[in-house]
Length: 176
Image (cartoon, rainbow, N blue to C red; front, side):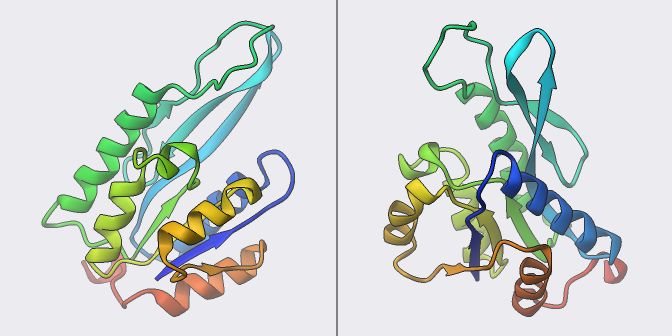
């Protein structure tokens, strides 16, 4: 019920998860969660990062500009928590019954017990499969947290679609 990809290359996992979510939604599948969208800007050597909330289409900025010489983490924890709150609200709605939860990544915030970790737990507890990505550097932490129950999926759209379809209960948008 917990699948993840490890992709190489900047933004590769973001693009893969966004494409999977888009395919599933076009098939009429009720998809909840968030995918990351990176925006290159000419005045900033580092991209701006937004989370696109899949159920509403809202975008939440999760990066902060720290200046061109900064080396610290650019994640805006307040933005991330805003996105998490939107997802958790969606998971709690009585009339919402997503067939799958797609989360942009299990990263440092989740390792530390914050970020999307509670939402992932809520979904799994409700029998909703979760598809996410994990940075190779965080894979051991993720495996420890998941108790070995997570399944690594090859980082292709086809493999992620196949995994998603095989783990979803039949609850799609056409039957709501």
